[in-house]
Length: 140
Image (cartoon, rainbow, N blue to C red):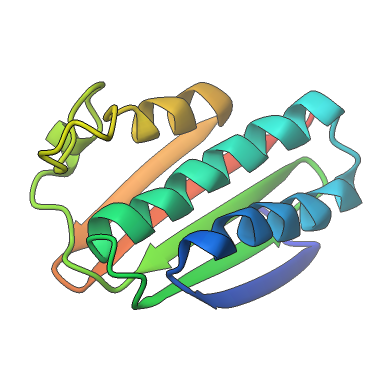
């Protein structure tokens, strides 16, 4: 992807920052004239990824940092959402529908499934202390 513009956002892993994160990414995305549906799709995927960081990586402690990096080309946006929490032991298993690490039944385990439904590509890399979710959304 040949970059036309980049940005980086660093925020605390607090629930109140989820909406802010998705709004900032959406505002950046509009530079390449996506449809309203494409913007809403990306906002949903970013929301899921940031929520995963807060709930799973930092186990809901409202502590820690999330870094979001975006790169635009004339035809797509690449968004990397990184946390520095506990990591994902088995990425393949975590990406299956209904898998969750929260035992209370409050989570549906559909975060990665939603991201995959709304993006053209979702790649997850993880180890203890660093997880990156890379989302790619193309414009027509």
